[in-house]
Length: 287
Image (tube, one colour):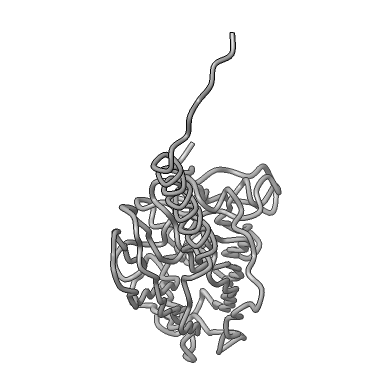
């Protein structure tokens, strides 16, 4: 049986109207697809990195420990963030990881104590997080990060900054001895870090690396333990540190730099005698 349809002029106009609406929607979608996303639009206006041009300060005020304070590494950046059309949250801030650590305290013929990062030392990881231990993976959550909550209508300019230095205490006496007689003869420290300026979407975990900085802190102190307190330690080279490198090409962040444990929780203090087996003096906080 044949079935026929009669198409009126009114039907034609309605069909044309639908086609035009669909075409318009397609054009709008096309324009939206071609517009820049957050990743392409966020801009670093300025980035600075330096180590204070001052020598390490040595403190012999304690009869139990020698203290020293290194100059500060400092990094700051201004970032221009585009409008966020949707309800989403981005965090812009600093992530830091340690990629190399030598931290030796020598006690003459007795041996040395050594702060070590076992997984890094054994090559199991490329770098270890230097987060504050609370706000992973961020170095901190005050001046170190800023949070942008969408939707926003205008672009915004934000500043983030961070600083880092060493201020440890080293026992004058052998750390595994009951004696309090000063035996410390030298301190050697050499650590390397990579610091990233990053933007992260809190919902999707999308991460945009905006800048990569490399820096290093070296330290040498000679100690004459037989001298009176206040006159034992002398700073060796370098008196001034190498300035950080702001890389022209960003480096990826190793997965181990984004998760627990951080360096402070993973480090272990070993005693390595000239003769005999090594001993754990202070175990890692994170096991």
